[in-house]
View 1: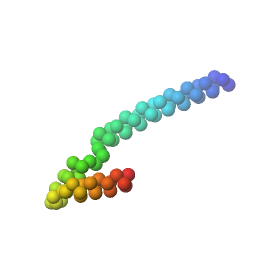
View 2: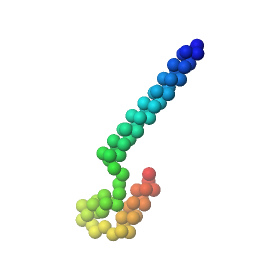
View 3: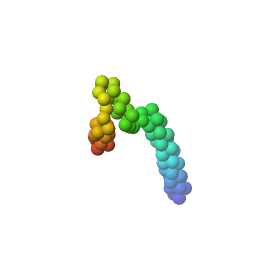
View 4: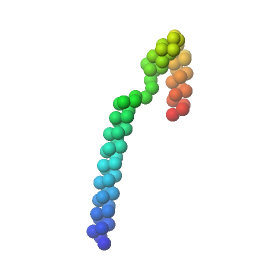
Length: 69
């Protein structure tokens, strides 16, 4: 009885540690492949659309992006 509880507890601890480790690695990989949007990306987007980006427009877009998160 005590043995099965001990093995279950050890299994849960090992599973939790492994789950945390692999989830953290996957999250870091996703951030590396798809970085969050920044001001430099917004400037590039405006330039690709043929518009001259002003600081006010860039701040407005950044605020809208941050509010939607």
